[in-house]
Length: 233
Image 1 (tube, helix red, strand yellow):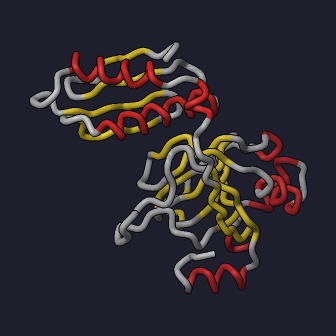
Image 2 (cartoon, rainbow, N blue to C red):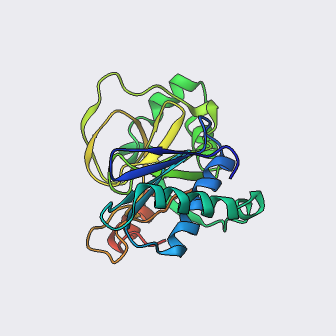
């Protein structure tokens, strides 16, 4: 695949790097390569972790050498072209979100920062399909792309010690969901009853890299009902 470099990451991993650009096209290539390598089920490959613009491939050096794995990555990449990457099946997850009030205590302050009304911020935030570029920081934490710059806002000067699981926030030009209670400095604009991480589930993490998320505004009553039902929409 044109523009790809293979770099060592310690003695048990290789990185297939697609450059220093964050874009949907590059991210589709990363995910297409991961799917291709997964289909091969090569002995010795332990795990693959996609990022915005690269794929980390961890391996067992007693089963497969760095040179052999590098050749496999290059061969898999050579079989992929733009059409294959563009053929990525789009999965859009609709995530219910209760905005403002006790569910999003920073929404009023966001209105002051941006010069927009709370309703305008909600409409803009809920009017976009956000691509899941990668997961990290916490289990199930999604790094989303595509947020409208009109609702961008700096992180809090003093981070909160604990943010409830399901909180939807904005930090800089990014938006995301806290999958579990944790410290954080993003401005909280809403909350979703949908669990993004459930260690008791057969599939603990809700999203995968390459998915899309659309937030759907709901009322406080709808939030409480869905929360009792386990977050299903």
